[in-house]
Structure formats: structure tokens, C-alpha cells
Image (cartoon, rainbow, N blue to C red; front, side, top):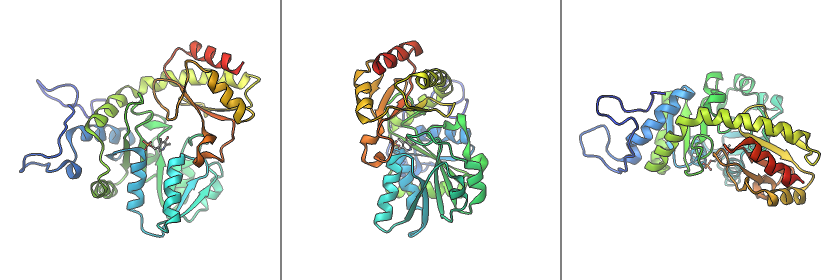
Length: 333
Ligand SMILES: *Cc1c(COP(=O)(O)O)cnc(C)c1O
């Protein structure tokens, strides 16, 4: 990945952290909120290349959805998967309650409901958080005349590039797999068309949803190692998913066959909580996609109360696979 690197004799290999709000007049940049900074731009260039579009960095993943709502006409019809990131559904539900949008939730695996939808904006997520449903993005994008947005946080651009199959906008919570070290909050939009990218950038400027200089640097640094982290964490996740599926205490394992995310189920909330309380190496924490393994029973969240009570979302880290299995096996008892 040469993208996003300074180039030339005496240049640093990595784009510096540029903590600037303002720039001397007469150049391309005036004020960071409006024109960006070299650090944001380096990150935008790399993710734009990977997804095949025009990228804009935001303060967080959820700020990308806020910007998309901002550029959507009042009263527009929006469809969102029933089982998808609770924060996204929460923000859309708020827009529905306040009369800003008309939001419908559709089951992610019922492709016919999506291809038959007359929504003006289809908010897709695949695999979904936390139930790991895989949506037929291609069929849905081909069938609709509405705007197609794909939350590609779980798949990453290495797993799929939705713009290449007809999506209009891809979004990422770079807080998760792209950052990869649980040390930042940042969001990214990648638009297929430059005019749409400009609308999103203008929304960022208007609303001030700008990333921090350090966060942009860390996200770019994380993105550079995403291929090796993803390969290793996927290998470990595949092994653990297979062993979990064979374990008598586990009632169901959801693993799409790729990626570092597993969801596995225990009979009820009590047994799931008892298992997580016995884990030592795997930490009980929200969020995902980092080098450290974390587990969370999602139904405790109000927004995910409809998720099976005993479902544990498991983000597989870079620890030794056998250490992780010993921890799981001993906690499952
Ligand atoms: C975490 C997450 C978000 C929200 O991102 P933040 O960076 O926390 O604002 C959006 N979509 C998915 C799939 C996520 O996992």
C-alpha cells in the first residue's frame, strides 16, 4: 500500500500527525473543519483506494450515519435490518420518532422483503452486528432505485467492496477492525460518486463531525496491518467456531466462515453470564475488532433486547489460539 504515504527524498515514510486547526492564508487549506488536514487526507486516500471510491473521515462510525441522515430529505423512507448495530437502529428510530424519517425494520436474511422494498434509502449491514447474518447485497442493490448504503465494518474492504456491486455509499466504524487496537473512535464514508462525497464532506463541515489528528493517524496505522491481523484472527476464529459448535454446553454457533467475529449461544442469560464471569484471558467488554479478545452478552443492551438472551458476541483477538480455547473450555465447564 503506497497510498497515503509521503514520497520523495528526505520525506518521512509515514504521514505526520498534523495538529492544526488553521493554515496560513493563500494555500489550498484554510480551516481544518472545512478543508481537512494532511493526516485525515492520507487515511481517506488509502480507504478510498481500497473501497474504490471517495472517502471522508468522521469523528465516529455513528457520525457517518448522522451525516447520511443530514443529506436525506425530510420524510424519506428508510429500511434498516432488524438485527444490525443497535446504535444505528437507535439513531434511525430517533429520526423516525421526531418525524424526520419514516423507518422500517426488515429481517436481514429475507432478501425478498428487501428487493421488494420501496425505501428511498436502504441501510444494509453485512455481516450484521451481533447476529452475523449475511445479506444479499448484490441482489438488493440491483433491485432498488433507492440509495444503497452498506455498513462494511465487519467485512472490511478486504472481505467485500460493496461499491463494486452497486452500493452508493460504504461506511465503516474504523473504531473496530480498521483501527484494530481499541484505542480510537473514528468513522469513514466512501462514496461511489464525487458529487455524493462532496455532500457528505459538506455535512461533516456543517455539523463539525471531524476526526482528531491522533485518531486519524492511528486509524491509518491500524489499516496498514489489517491484512495480517485479519488473516490470523480469522484463522483462530474458524478453529474456535468449530470447537464451540462441538461443545455440549453451546446451543448454537453463528460464524459466516470468514472474519474474526463469532456469535455463540448458551441456553439463557444466566448461563451466558456465568460463562463470561469465569473467563480470564478473554475480557468482558463491549466493542470489537481489536487485537485483544472480548466477549459481550448483547441482549443486556436496551437496543439489542430482541437478540437471543444467551447470545455472546465474541471478537477473536491475536492471542494464541490454544490459550483462547483453554480459557473458553474451562469457562464452559
Ligand atoms: C460500532 C459500530 C458502529 C458505530 O461506530 P462508532 O465508531 O462506535 O460510532 C457502526 N456499525 C457497526 C457495525 C459497528 O459495529
